Length: 369
Image (cartoon, rainbow, N blue to C red):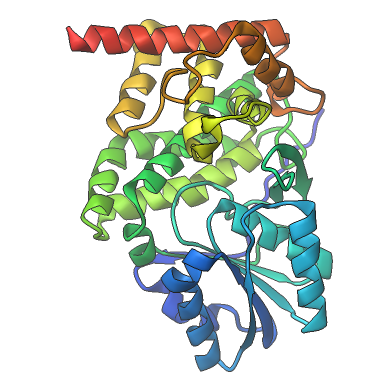
């Protein structure tokens, strides 16, 4: 019998102005840190992090993230961390910055503090990074011995981020239960290294419930740049519930399709992680046997949040069968997450991609009438 495995960050803190208490939550981690953020994020939150650390008598080395979570970037910043003898690596920003911070922390055996500036992915809580080439092509998953020591989510900062980022996070999180339930049914393994626990299953299912219930209200809250109970609920679903749910519940086809899209060149790479996962989720639903009502429930929700649901929406309107087969082959390579829940060929996946596109086009035609 396979072992049940559940993993999580040591501490998760979320709330309005939570960043002001970072010094309190970092007690015992040491007094030397590096803070990683890209050029834009320094003005949004990076400088504030440094100021709050100074109040707590914690020194920091500012490092500008170059934009890609690659092996070269991780190694570059790890050398800086070693030179300043940092005991804590703090990542501030989006998914790739945070994944890089986790990689750097692993290289230098430091504490890991994660501060997302948007609820756009479920990367913050996990013990893994998605590693890309310097050109942005998916390379591999990198797994760590532990999850972050502290995940600090300031919802005031989240509320001021573009609504598109929250919608992207909702799309990423909406894949959580879709993928986890298929892994459970198939008897596959999770990213945590075992079969799904009852806790992992419950969290993944609750994640979807919260998103359908409060997603629209949270989206409108961010348009107004205000923190509301609905936004707090969805930020937690996007970040904590989805993070725990995907890692201890399991990834399947939706994220494999996302990774497959990196095999293509073009405007698709201007889309966010969550936007590509949204279409990948529809492809997974097309691989399974669902009713029209069930599939249209997801399509309608995505459209209402401005998310892509057709090949045209993801800038692949004129993609040939050959192009889509490149995606399908990449999505079904050995070790990809699709194998956690499906026994399918690349040809099956290509068919499902075209089917998902047609389902969404048919729905759009129907609601126009």
